[in-house]
Figure 1 (cartoon, rainbow, N blue to C red):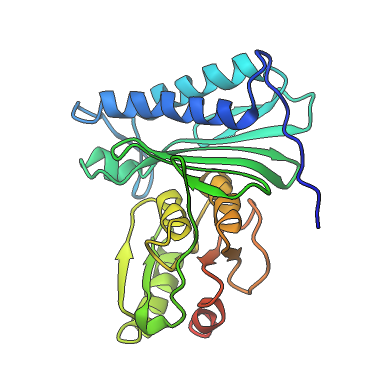
Figure 2 (figure 1 turned 120 degrees about the vertical axis):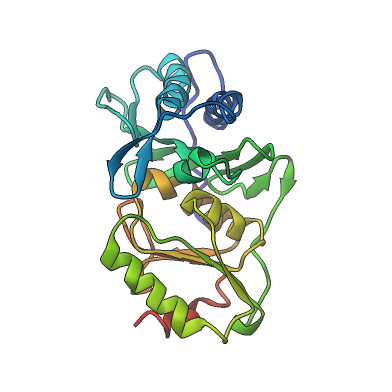
Length: 266
C-alpha cells in the first residue's frame, strides 16, 4: 500500500486543504457578488472570453495563497507567479466556465489544486451558485461538502449520461463532435457542460458517467485528476495512458465504461 503523502502546513498553521477551500470560496464570493452585473467581457481568443471579474476572483485566490504559502509557485489561467523555493505549485483557475458566467448560465466554478512536481496532493472545485464544494486530499477520498462521494456504477454505454465540451480549437471540436455522432443512439444521453472542471466534478459525484475533452489546460483539470481518482474513477489521455496535468486530451470515467468508450475515439 502506497504511503499517503504529507501536505505542507501554511504560514499561519492551516492545512493545505483548508487553505485551498478558503481560497476557492473567496473567489466564489467575488463571482456571486458580480453575477448579475455588467461583465465587460473581452475576447482573448476565438470563443474565449476574459472579464474584469476573472481578475478580481484571481486576486482573491492569490491573496490567500501568497499570505499562507509565500514561497510556493502559483500557476493560474490569468497570471503565473514564478516565486518558488519549495517544489510546490498551486494551480488555479479563478473562473472556469467564463462563457456560461458571462451569459448568465449558472454552470461555472473555481479550481484550486496543490501539486508537488507532477503529483496532485490537494484538489478543490467550488461551484458558488449551488454552494457545492468538491474536495479531495490524496489518499483520503473525495467529498462533496462533508459527504463522501463516488463515481457512478453504470456499466453500459446504453445507460450512461456522457458529458463533453468543445473548447476553442476548431479541429479538436470537430473530433469531439465526430465521437458524439458515433455514440449517438448508443448511449442514454449527452450533455455539453460548458466547464471542464464541472464536467470532471460531475463524474466524481456520479451525476455523469464519463466526460471527455480534447483541448484543455492544467488549471482546467488539476483538481479533477485527483478528485476522480479518489472517487474510484480514472482519467486517461485518448490513448488510454494515465493523464497528467500536461495532457490536453482527457477521458474521465467510472472505469467500467472506459474501454467501451475508447472504441469510438480510435
